[in-house]
Length: 73
Image (cartoon, rainbow, N blue to C red):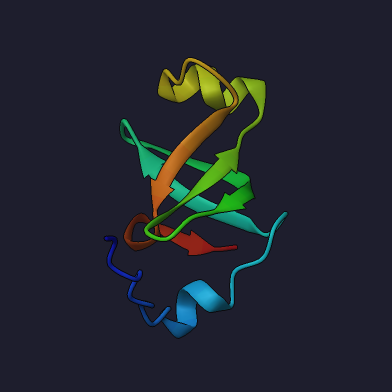
């Protein structure tokens, strides 16, 4: 027996996000700008430039950012 998944209301801010939308966030005291690659329930996956990825010490050009930690450019 399994329980049905309960639908969770998505906030207006999250519902308004789109793929390839530019956002900015601060990581390791550096403000960086990237494009949304994928939208998740509590966060987004962001595509960064190689330079910004190196600047913040990310192992790749993709990083995860909480919806609470970024702003739309």
